[in-house]
Amino acid sequence: MRTAIALVPAWLAALACAGQTMPYPVGWVYTTSVLDPENLAFIASTVADTGGESGHTASAVAKLTTPDGRISYGTGGWSFSSFASASISFCDATEQCHDGWFRASSEGTQEYCPIAFSYMIVSMSHADRQQPPFVTAVGALWDPASVARKNRKSEFLLRVTKSSNCPGGEAEGTIAVFATDGLEYSLTPGILDPNKSAFIGNSATVRWRLETRDTNPTAGQVLGAADVMAAPCTIIRNQKSATLTVQ
Image: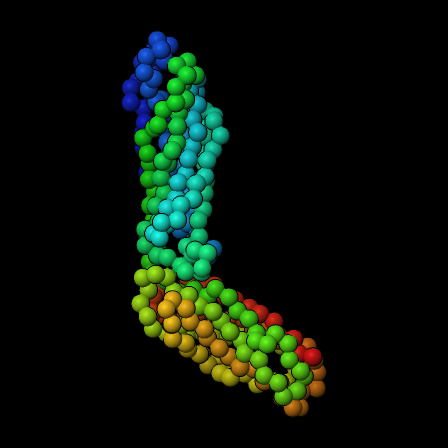
């Protein structure tokens, strides 16, 4: 929303500054935000503008706060029109992801009167967004990452996380496999058969087993690409892939 901060007419503000009395803000501040599920991020920006009234300048601040209390700031330089932006991840450093209210504000934005040599804290604007509980893939790998050409096994592991308020249950994943021409192998479950894993805490690992056949005539690579297709709450699609070397 746009919040006006002009508390008195501009000409009165100019007289106040010129008379060295208490200065008044003459501009406005506006904060906007968006949830970016594709990148698991909350993004916000603030614009503060004085229009150059009485020579006033502003410095915009975008303050972001996550449901778990993490904070990020973006700041803009001093100008007649100042712009600040910031972003913060849905997930913390431990890969724990959070849902709920992500809060954005212009808290800290200031205006400066060059005649009275005074800084002013201006009225705040807000742009909060609510992210529903969700499940998303956060990583994938083959274990081991390299196998011999014949009669060897490797597991494709799709790591899945659920946000703080998503209920327990199972994550169901599907996989697509792209192999070097002529490479013979079996995959369990198959590419048309979804596989499930129960959440332990906030994490689940969906697994597929690949085995090179004893008749396999060639070396090469197998690319696995998997994603979550069913879960106990909203799914944020986030396909993860990994490559297995067959030698």
